[in-house]
Image 1 (cartoon, helix red, strand yellow):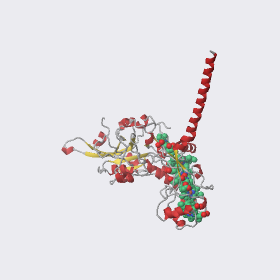
Image 2 (cartoon, helix red, strand yellow):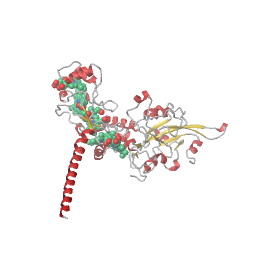
Image 3 (tube, each protein chain N blue to C red):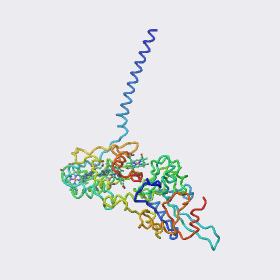
Image 4 (cartoon, each protein chain N blue to C red):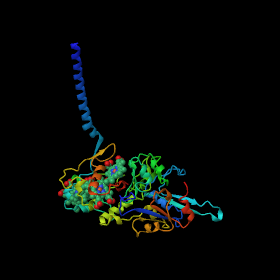
Length: 250
Length: 186
């Protein structure tokens, strides 16, 4: 353990989302839904009850016509890197959600989860959803589920995993090819789907990675950084009002 | 007074006898009957023999795909190379040829160490760590008269020989491999 409460390792996966490039097409959200076997309700209008790992928000600056500005903001799990604990891992009574210090990924193990929803309350980003019903898919869709991600059951919480199953697959291949584990890169489904290439993903500790470069950009900011949750998802925008909004009072 | 005393001790004896008899019955139910009831017995679709295929290398049937995943049990295209027509008058080979190869049906092999859907297992890191197959599987090179029966837990659907999480984690801790939850869970 170092002073900041993290064990040292060569990998810290993170994301950078360029809001100036984002067109709000929601391809990331749809790709995530399909990749991770996220279930949906016949009526999806109640957003407090539906499940979305990659939520796309519509934000505006609240000004009147000539000064009116808006932006879309895709929001995965921030995989908070705060020392010792993320808000959710701190409160979980059964260790169902734990941050892996070797990769920085905050996982959530569904069969371990007891559905107390304490983590949902603790998460300042609303990145977690609860399964109020047994997940169900209409007739032919059940056969289209991905075997790479397990389906959830009623009564557990779920959230974005940074597509850790894709990391596992990439590491498997790296073991076979005899590569160095710290050099393994992979692409989450949302990053792959983005038509305007607004999302970058990679190792924040690797100075040469695009995501590390973008995280240091002048346009970069993080959501609610004043809470010291240390999100590993960075946003980029040249608009000051967005920077301000990201840290506005709750 | 004396008589009364004798009769109580007789009752205690009888009670003890009932207790021991009950205990024995409970033990038999718990140790013999319950496990039999708990596990259903499943047999493989045919009696495949590894010993009869010693001429082939393991990698002819169990190999890695270029993306790092494992081919698992071989498909009928593999068997067809040699078993297009029956070579022997073995009943097992007849099943293979007539029931599967000629009908173009894949063989539904049972996997003894089958893991539940929420577990991610990969052979690649274990191959890289040079583990022997027998550390996790039965020894297929031993002369097997018949393929073993798969005992399936009626309650959980797990196979009796599914490796438990503690066993995976124990070896990982000993060998310094990752024990982060999402390493093995998906």
